[in-house]
Length: 419
Image (cartoon, rainbow, N blue to C red; front, side, top):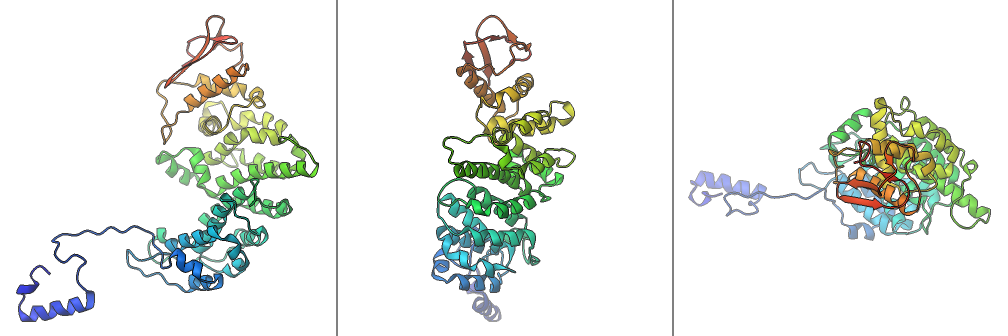
């Protein structure tokens, strides 16, 4: 191009032929030019999809063959537009879910993600067809096509869709306009029970996540089995809440473990390191321990040592459970009697060279907040007979960003068990 005006006739003819076939460069006067592609992109806009009948959209998803150019629209980009359309008007797409059988997993995930987002924005829809279609995908998935092009441009298996299904159900178990009716209890449980046995995450997956600095809680919400375990605890609370409504009880949830007997074999199975060594799954037990204790106080109390193991051989599982508990649970007077040894062990393990989590959070700071909160309530979080305690001066805990003081109760001396 830069010398096109000075070319011999023969080369000018070749040049004109190339221009006719390929077109001129975007900026022919620039000696150097680099473009930037932002993707993935879709062959249809959101307005295009809204203008289409749902059956026509499904026909397009079946027939569209993505081009192989590096900056061309991709199945992932189209799936995101499907998600936006379903989230905006979920009831419109419920009647055609049965027609999705055999369609590419990338688009199936897009539909389920749309329903999940619709629940979060309180848009109601008929849950029966959604759960029936989820059951089909979980228990009888059809073969996925072999991706043509980069793997990140489309889903190569059903893993992401299964994780999204767990997320849809977890969102639907909360109270509100888009809540799953309790009449679907059996259907919901069969889906969650199956997802809880998903192989994702494998130990290799977790090592890869760990190398990136992700904590176990982050892993749990980004894996199929981890997400399903979150949903199972929410399922127990959902069943308990509706059982109390049926009995006309008012006020907060009360402990009635008999109403959710189905969850305990699953929780018992996956808390066993030999059966499920996943740190992501272990973090679910820590994060949800107060709720597990609410659902089954005897079960939770008798498994504290298994969930929060204090032996050195299982320190990784201790860390996963403890960090999830202290970072994501509020101090609870109900669980303190059974967790007091866990708090003491956490104080004993504190060190000045604590490494922050990926986003800068420090578990020791949250531990300090827990202990101070208990102090404000007039509750002794630590055993008064512990070597950490003395009888003079105010009780004190120093954490990385300052010192908290609590003047009531016994005093905590500054020693090897106090940071």
